[in-house]
Image (tube, rainbow, N blue to C red):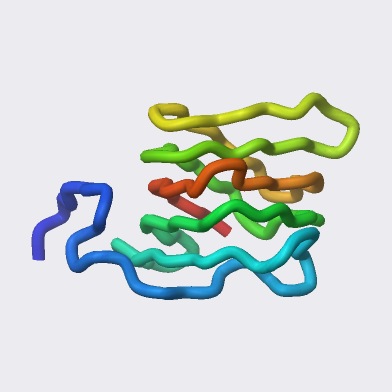
Length: 116
């Protein structure tokens, strides 16, 4: 197996329906989600995730996450901080322990790498 993986917006085998957003965190109706895991090794997971507009409350986020927005737009509002909007071409890092509001403003597809 190769140790290099080309990331494409649809993943190597396309995206599949999934449910990542915990129901108890939702502030709006649940989004339609799809995604694929590119690789998962130890505490690291790399993949692609897409969701239709929704909002959720995050408390003590369990990962460090690096995300690159492929399409769409999100707004992240940390407790006690200013809201930040990220759109296609933007990259953000969310640290483990983050608490605040995460909102998909426009159907969003992103690459992500999480580390526990």
